[in-house]
Image (cartoon, rainbow, N blue to C red; front, side, top):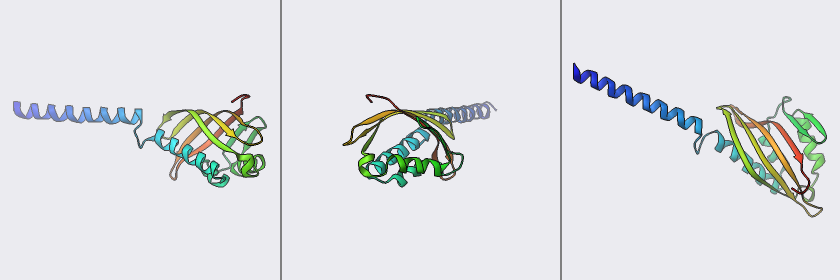
Length: 157
């Protein structure tokens, strides 16, 4: 009887410890967790931008009328509106320049949502420009997408 009690206790402790470790790993994120997935999208966006591929850059955004973008020109609603805004503001490679994201802070809010804060900088012949941004990401069946972008220009960035 004692042997069965000890065996059950050992099994219960092992299961409990495993559950706690799993919960801790999930809360901290892992190399394949939400933070890594969001950072991978930002890396892909930066690469696409630097190759002059605005449409590939935009794949990081939620293709929905619910997408929002806030900036110095006000609020733009919907994927089509955000797409038009980027095409109008950056009509060619020269206007696009070279994009660098720095100071990225990814805060996983829950398993399906994340907030990203960071700095952006465009190196261009006609003059550099940069600023700060905050992005809200949401996980969809097809993967993580930006559902809200607030980008501001900051002089001297």
